[in-house]
Amino acid sequence: MKLKLIALAALLLAGVAATADDRGYYTKDYQQQALEIFRHIISIRSAAGHGRMPELSGYLAEQFRNGGFDAADVHILPQTLSTGEETASLVVRYRGDGSSGRKPILLLAHMDVVDAIPSDWERDPFTLVQEDGYFFGRGTSDNKCGVTMLTTTFLRLRREGFVPTRDLVIAFTGDEETLMETTRALVDEHRALTDAEYVLNSDGGGGYQDEEHNNVAFLLQAAEKTYATFELTVRNPGGHSSLPRADNAIYDLAEVLSNISEYRFPARINDVTKGYFEAAAPLSPEPVRTAMRDFAKNPEDEAARKILEAMPSEVGVTRTTCVATMLEAGHAENALPQSATATVNCRIFPGDKVDDVKNTLFEVGGNPSLEIRGTAETFEGPVSNLDEEVTAAITDAVHATFGDIPIIPSMAPYATDGLHMRRAGLPTYGVAGLFMRNEDVFAHGLNERVPVKSFYAALDYWHRLLTDLARKD
Image 1 (cartoon, rainbow, N blue to C red):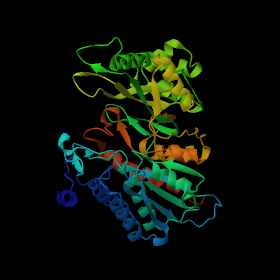
Image 2 (image 1 turned 60 degrees about the vertical axis):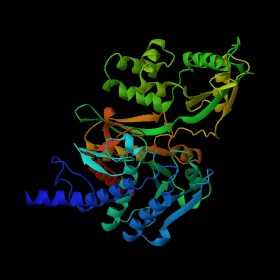
Image 3 (image 1 turned 90 degrees about the vertical axis):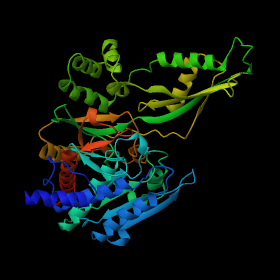
Image 4 (image 1 turned 120 degrees about the vertical axis):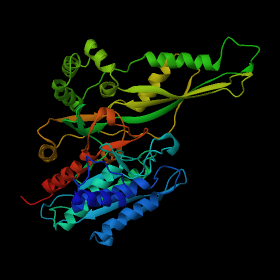
C-alpha cells in the first residue's frame, strides 16, 4: 500500500489526477520521464495564433541537451509563417557509428495542435488529466503523444548507451495542423539536416482495438490523399428583398451544391488500398467482409462500392471525396444576395489530379457562371512502396508489444507532414504505436484522450522498433 501511495503522490506532484486502476503500475524511470514530458507539453497551448511554439521547441531542446545530446546536434529552426506568426521546428540527431553505411532514419511528429476552447471541454484541455484509464487533454493523441514517444525513446536509448549503426534523426514540425510550411522548409531548405533513407511518422497508422479494448490490427500507413480546398461562388446583381428575382445567388449555389453532393468520383484502388481491403476483410462482419473482398478484386463492383461508400470509415479509401464545409452569402437581411460562396474540401486519391477535380466540380455543378478558386497551394504525394526491412521490424515490434495481430497496409484519407516527405522523395510510413478503440478517437474534437495503458505500451514499442532497425546484427 505504501508503494502505491508513493506512486500516487508522484503523479499528483506531476499535476496529473490518477485513478486506482493505474496507480503504482508505471514507475520505471523512462515511464515517469515520459509522463512529465507529456504533462508539460500538453500545458503549452501550441495552437495557431497563440505564439507558443518557440517556448515548446525550447523546452524539448532542453530535454535533449540535458539528456546528453551535444548542443550541435539539437537544432531549433525559427520560422515566420506566411501569416506572420512566429513558429519553429526542432531537429535532433542521434549519432551512430556509421557501420551500416546507410543514410539516417528520420522520425517525424508535429508539435502544434488544433486549438481547444476550454469552456467547451469537461476538463481543462491544457492540463493533463488522468481519469478512468485515460489521459485527457488537447494533443494527447494528435500529436503530442508522438512527440513524447520519440523524445523519451531517444533519452532512454542514450541512457542505455545504445549506439546505432546509422544516425537517427527526429524532426518535430511547427504547423502541421495549418500550413505545413515548417515541414516544407525541413525538406526544401534544411535537407542537409533531414535527409534520410526513409521516414517513420508517429502521426499516421497505429493500432485498433475492439469494444473490449482487445488489440485487433495494426495499420501501416504508406499513402495519403491530397488535401485541396475550393471556394465556389455564384454572383448576382441583387436588389431589394421586396422585389424577388427569378435568379438568386443563394438558391443557385444551393443547386450547385446539391448536384455535387449527388456526384461520386470514380472508384480507385492502388497496391496499398488493395492490400488494406484484403487484410481487413477477415476482421470485418458481413456484408462488409464480402464487399471488401469484392472491391479489392474489382473496384467497379457496384454492390461492393455502395456498401463501402455508405460507411464513413471506409468511403475515403475508395475514391476522391469532396464535401461542402462552410457557407457565406448575402450582405443584408433586406437585400437580395449579390453573392453566395461555399467552401468545398476535397481529399484527392493518389493519381487523381487537383485540376481535374476542380474541373469536375465545375461541370457537375451545372452552372456556367460558377466561379471556382483554390484557397491555397496544393501538393500531391506519391504512394510509398512497402519496404521489407521496415515491415519486418514493425511486425516484430508490434507482435512483441501488442500480441500476434495482423499488420495491414493503409492509406490515410487525411493529410499529415508525411505528404511533404513523400513529395521530397523520402518513403514515409505511418507507424504510430497507440492502440485505441474507434469510439475513443477524439482528435480535433472535444475531450481528446488516449488510453493510459496504450500510452505506456507505445513507449516499449518505439524502443524495440528503433533498436531493431539500427542495431548491430
